[in-house]
Length: 232
Image 1 (cartoon, rainbow, N blue to C red):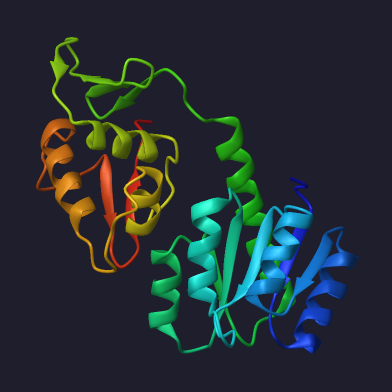
Image 2: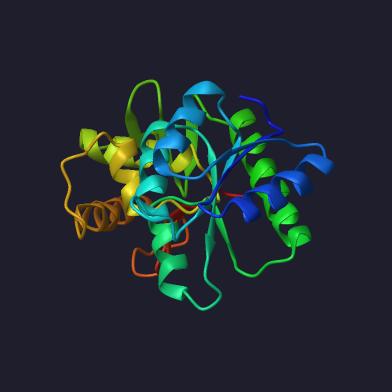
């Protein structure tokens, strides 16, 4: 994956060309796609670091394509929404987008958001844990697939609970939607309004939080998902 490669997915050729020219002038390698089919072809041809994805595409809309990308690729996703489409912004975060920008936008703001997403991706790639990780006053052993308290006593967890904790600790300070967590835990048999993740998060908080009613380790981000906050 080329960290300077961006894929612009928009059905408006004028917008695609404008963004391609602007980003190319600032050192990015830009590919373009006007549909979901074209996007898939570009993803196979040359993997981008970030996909700039219009939510209002005809046919397969941006939300459908964002879900497709999140389930199959480690790639940054910035959704482009209408100026007043708050529901679309929340929906974009729910399916795993890293950020969004509303039309009409200043290209300089887009570039700032793009740089921010790239920094997060770089940090994520260099700081992925592979051993024993602190979760509040507990510890998760990724190799032994075990959770223990501060005294070293094992805390029983199910396989699904372990996978859920693993997904969270591998993405610290990053909001993960229910869709992302269901995909990361290999639990793909889900419904659009599945709340099994919420139930498991509640159970995990009873095991790792000092006060489960006021969680400080596994935070809820309203309308978006959950986020693991490591100890400072």
